[in-house]
Length: 371
Image (cartoon, rainbow, N blue to C red; front, side, top):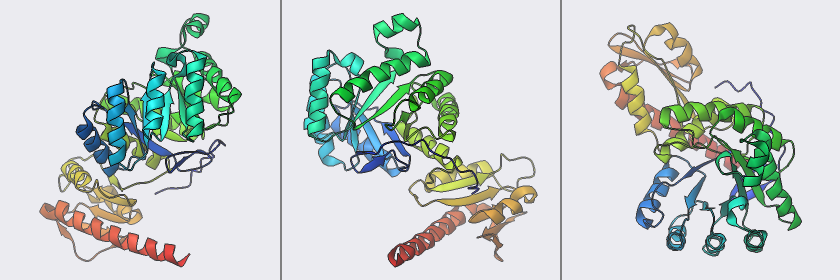
C-alpha cells in the first residue's frame, strides 16, 4: 500500500466515548446506528453484534420514548461496545439514558427545549462524566436562524453550533464533540471547514441522509474524503438507506484509501475483460464474504491476466495472476513454484490468506512482547 501521502490532522481536544478515544490524533473511529426498533431488544442486540463483526467502534441507538429507554437499559447490559443515546425533543429521555449507562449522548439542543432543560442534561452528563455530541443538521435549524439566512447555509449551521457551544462553555462543560451535517455535500463540507477554524473540540463528520447504498456511498465518500484530506474529522458515520453493516464497510474503505486506518483484506482486483482466465468478479465477491471476520490488514491482489497481474502481485502481500488453467501465485512479491488450479482459486486463496494472517498476527505478538 502506498503510504507516501501524509495527512496533517487538525489539532483537537481529546474525549472518550466509553474506552474509545476521539480527537487529538486518536485513530478516526467508525460509527454506525441501529435501524431496528429499540423496543425490540433482541433484534437490536443481534444487529449490534453483527456490526461488531465488521469492526464498528461506536454504535448510536435512538431513544424516542420512555419504553425505548427501558429497552436501552437492557441492551446496555448485554453488549460491551460503547453506545450513544440519540435524543430529540424530550430532555427526560436524555436523563434516563445517562442513568441507564449511555457512553455518550447525541442531542440537538435546539429541539430539546428551554435553557433550563438543556442545563439539566448537561449538569447530569458532567456529573457522570458522559460526553455529548452537539448535532446540528441543515434540516432542523432553529426558526430564528433560518429566518435570518432564508435557507440553510454554512454560516447558518455554524451559527447554530456556536450558540450551543457557547452555552456549554458557560456551564464549564467541555466534554463534547460537534457535527454540522447536511445532505448537500458542499454545504456540509464548507460548514465543517468554517467550524473547524472556530473550535478545538473533536468533529464528528458525515453527509447526513446521503441516500441508498450506491448514491449514498458516492456522496459520503466525496464529502468525507474532502474533509479528511484537509485533516478535518475525528470520527465518521456513513449515513446510508441500507443495512448498517454497509455503513461500516464503506467507512473503513474510505479510511483505507486515504491511508488513515486499515482493517481486514484490501482486495486489488481488475474490472475484467475478455483476457481474464477465471471469473474475477465472482472470486472477489466470494472471498470478501468469506473473509469478513478478518481484522488484520493485508493486501491481496486478484488479477485475471498477466498484463497487470504480475506487477500488482509483486507489490501485494499475496497475489494471484490469471493464467491458462492454472494461475500464478505470489507471496511477499515472490513467485511461488506451485500454481493454483483456476477452478480451486476461491478455496485455495481463502486458505492461503488465513494462513498468512496467522503468521502476521504471530509476528506482531512477538514484536509487541519484545517492546
